[in-house]
Length: 224
Image (tube, rainbow, N blue to C red; front, side, top):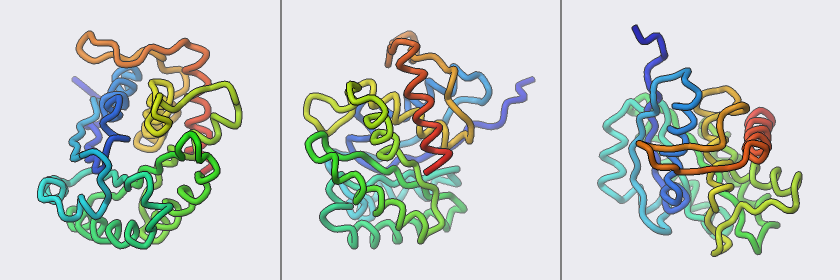
């Protein structure tokens, strides 16, 4: 008899910061290696560069919300949203949160990170996500803060991909560890640095590097 709790149900609404390296699949990989829960059940609605406004008007995103209840519905604004038009970000976050509440779901905001050449913008991004999370009583997934903490702790580490915007495999692993810490309320420390899906290796990091990222992730989640 399987005594593990039922799988977490998580809906991801966002853009390429979700589907690059398939963040939900990486979280699922961590869950499987932990062996403490049934697998994550996730659905996604994503498109390149889209905003929360796009999701508000997108029938698929709205329909998926109604297919809850979800343990979490993750909302991710386009990278420039918090910097260029936080008012519009907040407006559409409120609208989507209202729909999520109708299904007894919980809104979670996926705080993204600054572009590699605009690292000083992370504070503005973080403040925007923190502000709307507090206003709505939503959960904050402080990925951007974890990236900043990792870069501050190790100036030689590389988290960005070649375009300076998206995550490389190391950044994606750190992102997944932050989500794991938030969704499951426990540390990812001690989990493997190699994650696979149906025999296909998704991420393969040295143990020492994985431990560093896991520690940074949970410290950030515990002390946002």
